[in-house]
Structures are given as C-alpha cells and as structure tokens.
Image 1: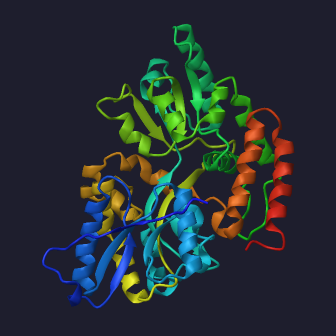
Image 2: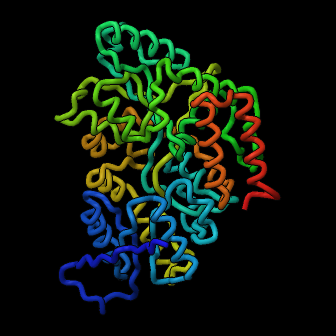
Image 3: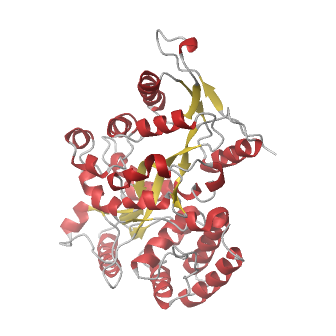
Length: 421
C-alpha cells in the first residue's frame, strides 16, 4: 500500500524567537504558485495578533490522496499533525466527526458569505467549516462566432442545443470538419456527477438526495434532463467527450474546436492569456435554464476546517477568522487567483481592479447548488459513484433517462440503508 506523507514547512519570521510564543499551531499551506507567499502573510498577521506561533505543512496536491492522508491522521488522533486545513466541498459530511463545531464561534457570519458554501458546510445545524474560496460550473462560449451568426448567448438548454446545431453545421460547411457545438466533462468520475446535477436540477428534477436525506431521483423531470444530454451525443457533442475531464474539454475549446463548453472559472484566465488563440473571443455566462426557467450550477471550491483534536481550539478559531476576513480573501485573490466567498467583495474596488471578470461571476456564485455530500456523509463517495456511472450509461446509449433514474433510485436507496451515516 502506498504510504502517504505530508511536507512540513518552516517559514521563519525575521526577528521572532519560538520562546516568545505561547503555543504553536500547524496550518495547511496551499500547494500552488504564490502559496508560500500567502502563508507568510497569514503567519505575520496571526502571530502579531495572538502571540502564538504558526507553522505550515503541505498535503498532496491530488484531492483523493489528501483525503486519505487526513483520514490516516484522524484515525491516529495526532493532535500535532494539523490544526487548520482545507476541506473539499464534498468532504464536510464525511469529516463531520473529525472537525470542530464552529457554530458558536462563527455562526453569526453567515450573512457575509454566499449561501451555497455556508449551507454546504452546515451538518445537522452545526457549522463545520468556513468558506475559503468558491468555484462553480459555468458556460463558456465563442463570442466571435455568436456575433458572426447573429445569435445571442443561450438562456435555456433548448436554445443552446439549437444554436450549437446551427453553428456547428455552418462551421463544418466552411471547412472546419472537427468543430463541435457543445463539450463538457463526460468521463465516469466526479466531474460527470457535477454535470448531471446541473442538468437535472435545471429541469426541476432535484439534487438526487434532498436536504432531509430522501432519495428523490426517480422522477420524470430528471429522466427528461438525462434524455436531453443523451440526445447531444454524436450530434453536437463528440463521443470522445466520454473520456474528457476538465483539461481535455478546455484543450478542445481553447484550440477553437467547440462553440460552447461547460467548465470551471479557472478557464477564463487561460483563455485570455497572450498565447491563447481565443484571447478576446470568449464569453462566459451562467449555465442555461431548464424548461421552467430554473438555472443550476454545481458548487465547488474549498473550505477551512479545524481538527477536532486540536490542543488549542481558541487559537485555531482566531486563525480561521483571519483566514476568512476581507483582507485575507483579497490577498488570496491577488496571490493565488482564488475567488472570494464574501459577497461584499464583489463590489470592492481593489478586488475588481485585480479581477474585473468577477463581476460576471457574482450572480453565478450566488446560485450555486451543493452536491448531496453533506447530507449523505460518509456514503457520498458511493453516492457519487452511482450517479456518474449511471449517467455515463445514458451518454453511451446503454440506458434511457427513465431506466437510468429508476436504476439510480435503487442504488442510492441501497447506499442509504437505515440512514445516512
């Protein structure tokens, strides 16, 4: 079995002696360009404000490896391993017993943040994490081609399908034989769960499992949404999409071979880079609505959590308050490019000077829908596996929407058993 390890980082603060500090906390430092610079900024603020010392560790960059390591550390009940760390959006229910209850200390801050992450981070009425940065699914489109063919960005999935069909045909007539109307993440993995949630919820078919834990997927609207996606395959969407994750989708789109693409906001900066063939030719909007006008976009991003075994919860909470305040979120945007989770910052001049594109994302972030991870707790990996495998069967033509929703209802009901735990 592969042994997972984390890296301990020593970030020295000039002129400071460890003897001068009352306690030492360990915090996860983001593994990304600008990560160490950001951590140094947090260290200086925390040590000056609290008199405690802050050290850093790096976890594996791969999400599944990081989760496995965290679970090893929690099982060992090592209070010195890590005090404050980042949880993926879908881990909050899974790590409920291993993370500190923040309700009393930070529950009153709810109104300052986007509602989606806050709701996602609340387990049975208890706040278990505070939003770090936000991510959601969005629709990228070729602005130049819509203008060329006198079309507007689509407001509904039906409009998207019509426009994609029309422009794909015209581009192929013009000699662009490998041009496609719409691409997304169709590989059998977590990304397909995100896409399926967006289609089904937009159609009014729910979120697979409701807030009370009831399995709700077996309904006509959910089946209709899956049949819509099935109808794209081989027509406006290449069958090769069944092997696409985020980067495969982005590569096809950024090479100029697709009109529309569902992906995450990180694509924006890459599409506008000086070496991008699509610089100045891309637009981004919220994902289209279903027949009744409902729009849905999957909540992504990361959350700050505190190890329930921390030996100094008061200091850890003080650190969390620093990490989640306005100054830290603005600094994180500047150093790491991560979108803030505080709503008011989307009208902040400093923020918009750094990332003017955020004006396009505010309304999208406000509509973000969490996956059913918090409510299904430790069973979420099994739940998501069932969702993306059944959806994959629809896309490759093995099942229609009705059969798929019936199948998924049975699978999720079995996963629930006597209750989500």
